[in-house]
Image (cartoon, rainbow, N blue to C red):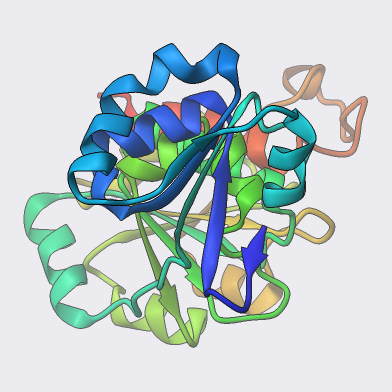
Length: 258
């Protein structure tokens, strides 16, 4: 939940706040927790006291719900400054290419919970770089995405771009641009092979239509996650597709295979 007046963001959920405290404790401006969670955050409270940052044990969990706008706070809410997402620049991409770092590009993934789940999967599989477009159709960092990421937000770097098409043109020949498409014939298991030694730029589309036609035209390869019966020649999956967050986990797994 974004506090527009104070330009703050509420981070809630036990795993999310614990990871935040471990990696970026000084970014926490205020902390609130229930009596049941007090012992879990003793060290954080001491560090906040040392820098005179306020923390408070609440008597009624409803107070936490008001702070974060969610019943899923799990007994703790930390307030941080609203995260600023830097624009991706050439030097950062150059570093990815030199170090053979893979990246994940989201083409208008609009659901905050899906974004959080994708970030969680990226952190789990060690893909640190996530790119999102500056678009109203794209979810950004919210209380929900932070919570669903289960601490993964602290282990990834999120960048923004004004134009996906320009980014794809800029990395042509330097990164393998791998998109997803239900009409593709190349299985996701061949992602690393199709990279030909280059770092991968994996592209995931939005929940309803997938990646746009323009993005597809600028991909080096389109892949599909094989569905039940596909090997036997069935043209349709039993369900239309995987949820974008589920698909990201499969693709990231395949991408990290040697």
